[in-house]
Image (cartoon, rainbow over all chains, first blue to last red; front, side):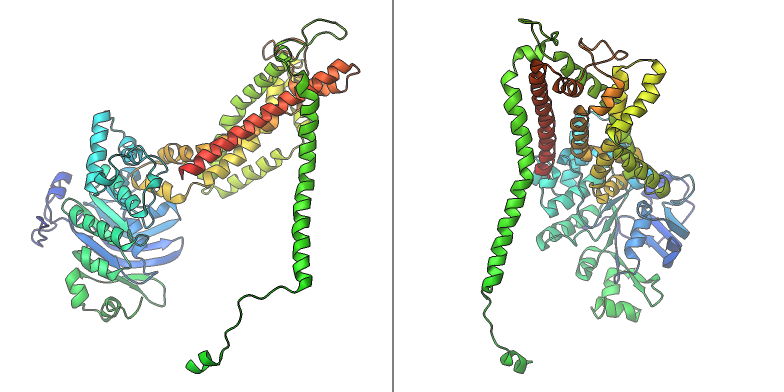
Length: 283
Length: 298
């Protein structure tokens, strides 16, 4: 499928004021990470990351375990704060808005930046209820028909509709792992986010399910900005447009080593560590 | 490498136990079964004795009539008022204890992590409360309500029963809520759900079968409590007259009738014990069914 939104570097960061203009101007990054350092408590895990996530592109974050790529992903929708006390230096901007600003409504932020987790985590309710949950809590009162339509659109969007259309009222826990993961994607799509974060979404899945999710990512990139963390380098090279390579040293502080178009990272990386990693020499 | 492989010998995987160990193993198996059986003997004996002595007199009349005066012949005799009194007091106790208990459980499980000290104190106090002897709770209710109002009342009885229920409901609710995986909470948050929505729409509703089980067990536990009621609700020979007068209850009726000098009252005590036991078994089975539904849904 041809991506209509060709990435062009022209007129980035011009005098853009209206939020809607930012979204329509495809050259504006969806998320900008500016000199971000990240701490769990007092333990520094990431230092000085500068990274732009381009609109309607798939950006992969790769690197060995403990390099901070998942931490950075969880910093983008502030979900890491649920688990532990965190501190940041620097900025993360979502279409120009500082997401760590003092009066940011964290729930609005998360409804704009959806997330798919490593392990499928459907709610222990019906398939239907899984999908309408996000719509219901957003406070929009919708009619039965509108909800039905939302469910159908979301499930079609995640290529699950044909498999589950006859059992929408059945428990989501009865689905296979791959179906559950696509349900989780559908659930995120239903709240119409601008960005979808994926934290190793295929690591708990079999190869066939993985393939389906990867195809889905290719579909979704037409309308969504996707950030994916993966341990699987083939996956990164297959699905992503841009790749950021993270690494760590003896200090155990993660840094971004290199960022470029995926093809460049995998064939012609400028950093020797990146070359070694994508060649499978470590990690 | 190949030298080592060739040098090693293939051994038999089956090796018979030496005679003494084989016999020891058998003896221990028999012993384990025997002790399990022995442990079940008291349960069986209690059930058998109560039902054997109580069920023959269990008639509709007993379940629907007021107690007759001793010595009166050909008068309807029963303890319907005590059944009603028990239901009334357990009901009122539940109305108070369940909301507070479940809320406290939600606090401990969902919000306790942010205030570990406060939550720790509350959990500790709840554990202590759950092991306070019920007669002490009775004295407490006497001091708080009976002494103030100036008389025994169903309300005081319900208060005592509720005090016993509260820690059971709190602790079982906390456990039920903690069983819900964190990933589900994260999923809700990632969809833009705030704490209230995540807690009530997702976590509590997922834990509802577990919470219900805890509530039902607490109900079963207090419906047989006697000591706290002696200090609070006392008893009465009449129908329960509202919350501010003494009320009859099965437990107290059993206590009074079983120590009575009149054989017909002794017989009714056995019957009342059967009825109470049946009620408790029903509640327990109900809680089992709720739990099993949850398991099969997974």
